[in-house]
Length: 137
Ligand code: ZN
Figure 1 (tube, rainbow, N blue to C red):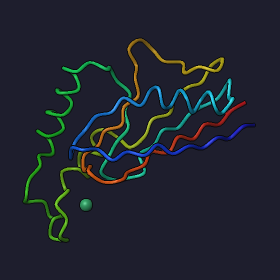
Figure 2: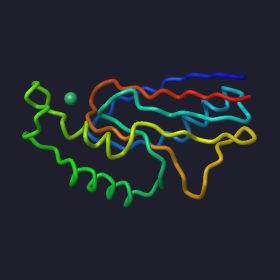
Figure 3: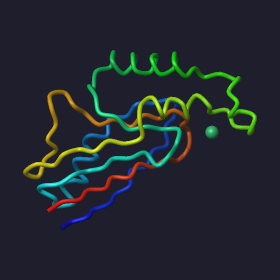
Figure 4: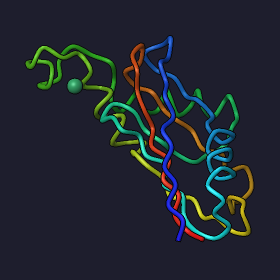
């Protein structure tokens, strides 16, 4: 069995950002040599997420508005009593989810139509990482 690990590093200019990481994850899969298996893509932070969806700019704006409507950037979270200001980012992480598992078939991701992998940053402007762990044969 092959096990391959890679870390993607982000340092976004904006507090919130949505980055298509499909090509990065595909490169990791090529390097792994895995032909049949699974690939875990997981944000290593509690204020960022990873999701699979369409690479359509209108949808990305909709996702951002939806997450901000449910967990608005605001000063009145109990979490802020610790001195932090990112209560919204923790809640947005729970909405979007931290990680995805991608199926690998015949050396390629077995994506459905329009499926793309995204890194969702909710509290950026600092160094953050995503782990890519591929297992299989
Ligand atoms: Zn926090």
